[in-house]
Image (cartoon, rainbow, N blue to C red; front, side):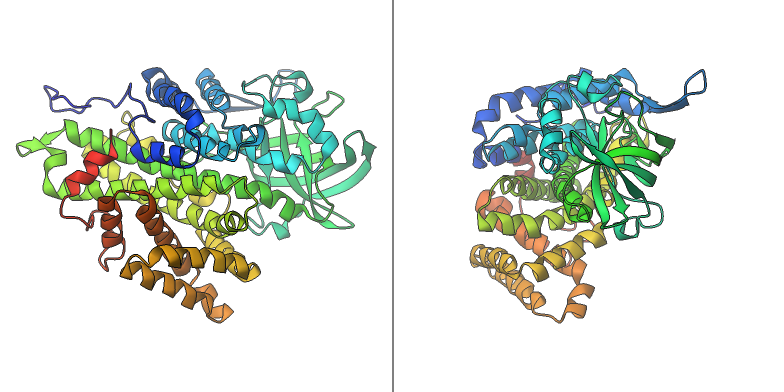
Length: 544
């Protein structure tokens, strides 16, 4: 969208189609076999870009959740109230399949279709993705308790949002969150102190009463949570803990306060205390960490997809602004140093989209290579896309100048949103160590991935060197390998992205990516090089 404003102010980017204007996303959907979803994604792209949705997203973040711990008569209600715009965004997310699509549609390509919807939704309102994607990720874990899953499956499969605070059996749909971390341990959930005491056996299996706390409990108004607590006999165990007990009474999960977060402000994150809260066993007793980590694997994919969406939105906003803002006699986008910067951002966006969408296409398959790719690349993609989103949203804010640093523009919220995915579901150090753990525990998987990268990299001498460096690192002694965890993960991601660009991007874009990303000067500052003598061509291809 272009047009010279009389005051040289760029108009708001609105009433555009996020899907139709994103050629890299559309190619990824077709390549992943999800062409059957194309018309629906076009509808969603228009919905996400329309002014009404943009206003709802703004309102959901401006009018933040409110905690009400007690009723007027002094009873504990532990109720979080939301602005109607929050429920609008939750309804859109649910209708668009983000809560369940890949688990209700048996086609493997449903993962690609799902990835496209999440990628677009995150660009417009990210807080509502938290309870929605956790609901999707809980489904394979809930299946470990067949009786419980039979009772919850219709509610999990629903495509409507039901905001009512009732026992889930009385609702049209349900959401499920996660409760892992405690104040004394954070990522080290082995130090958790919450305790679970047996309370008999019911229609859904072994029942327990849980006492303890959770330092981050997102989102407390979910209809249930998968929670870690220790039993006396076996240790850390996973439980389904509903907001309301099966008898209709409120489960004693007391919300202490809502977190005052830097971003993601539409979504309520809380600290809670369990006062003999009722829960039912999910998975094997004593196997709570590996049980709930399966849920985290799916949400880590979501972090990589959402962060690719952040990068894409940063690029879209920067392109729109520089096409409509003039300085020194020409549009900003035509100024050579700005063109170079935007071209570098366009490369970053395409590579991030390729990485996340390709990763999504490997889910839902038991093929040995797909399994190996998921194990190594999921934590690596989360590590890289989430970190790059912070840098790229900052660059886009700077493109706007002072207009980017005010709250009535689009960049403040996007910039504050970007860091959260690097922190949730495992920080950068945790992700890079998970990559190393996958290599050491599953060496055959590591060789499958490295063999594939080496085969694709044979087309380019610079890539061949990177692939060989990965093999050399894997052969290091364990202590030295661990010190290089971040270096190895970065090299793995850049090599994977370069190979994906070689396979699926234009010849111009892949050459520019390899030429820039393996240039010794590339890295700390975006825009040093876009790897091409014609950066404007990259921009023309980035937005259609």
